[in-house]
Image 1 (spheres, one colour):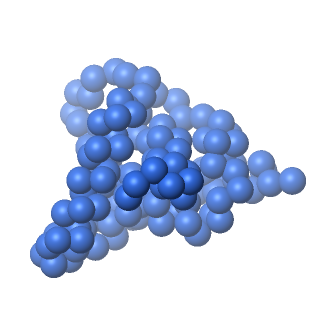
Image 2 (tube, rainbow, N blue to C red):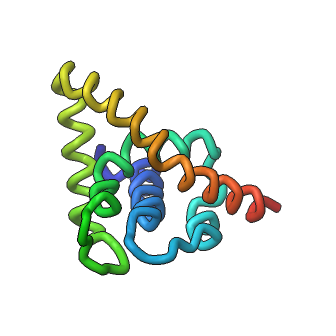
Length: 123
């Protein structure tokens, strides 16, 4: 995955989108400003196939710890490890497809709010 500009942009998206999974009020307008310029379809795909599988458990906890954000390095490592595991294992790819479908259903409201904010942020 290296240090290319594309990779840096992807990491920036991961970081911005992880804000949707913290246990406080989500500032969708601020998120939209951070990811402005990226096609909404790409944002949606990354949200549900890369960020949500790693971050969703924070919202699923019965008694989640209160925190303002994820640890950036840990988030990046966790997502990269998940993507590597997907590459290596056919079972993991199938399992993750099912998980992603559930995440799209369960967290649809995140995409609705973010898409609305992205629409308002466009010039």
